[in-house]
Image (cartoon, rainbow, N blue to C red):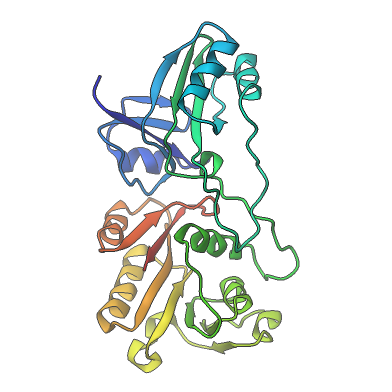
Length: 298
C-alpha cells in the first residue's frame, strides 16, 4: 500500500481542507485521507502522520494493539458503537484539562484513533498536535478582555512557543475593541493599537497601550519604526492583507508578524498559498479560528 496521511478538519471546515488537499482516497467524517507523505495542510487542525488499519477481535485486543504503539490516545468519534468507548476506557487516562495561558503545550505525543468497524481500528501514533484532535483549550478569562478574539492570540502564541516580553514594542493593526491589545498589555509589552474605531475603555486604561485613530492600510511602516512584533486581526480580503504584510516585510521593520487571514465567501486558496510560501512562516487553522487562518512569521 502506498504511503498515506490523514487530515482532520475543524468542525464545519471539511470543504476548505478537501479543496486544499486536491484529492483524497477516503473520508471518515471530517477526517480526510490522502496519498503521499504528510503535508503542512493549513486547514488541517491535526495531521495523522502515520495512520494504519488494525484488525482486532475484541475490546482487549484493541486496547493491547494501541498500547503497543504508544501511551497517549484520543478517540475520534466515527462509528456509533459502544466498543469505541470501552477501548478508550481501557487506555491510560489523558488529562483533558484546559491550559492556563503561559503554560507550555503537553510534552508527550498524542496519538489519534477511530473505530472503522467492530473489528477494525484506524490509528496513528504520530500526530501533528499535542492536543487531542488539535483542540487547544484554555482556562478562559471571562471578565478582562473586551471580546473573545483574545483566545486566537493566546493559541497562536502558545503554539509558536514564543510570546512578547515586557518592554517589547508591538503594533496591533485593526485593534478595536482591543482583545489582542489586552493580551499584549497583560504580557507587559508596549502596544500601539491602530484602528479607526476606539478601543474599549478598559483596554485603553491599561499601562503601555496607546490608541491611534487611523487605517492599518494608510500607516507608513517607516513612520512607526522598528517593532518587535506586528499583529493584525484586520477584517479585509486576504489579498489586501498580503500587500500590507509585504510592505512591512520590505521595510524590514517587524521582527515577528502574526496575522489573521479572514475569508469572506469562498476560500481564497491562492492567496493562502502565497502566505505559506514566505520563508520561515507558518499558516494554520487554529482551534479558535472561524473561516480564517493564522499566519506567523518569526
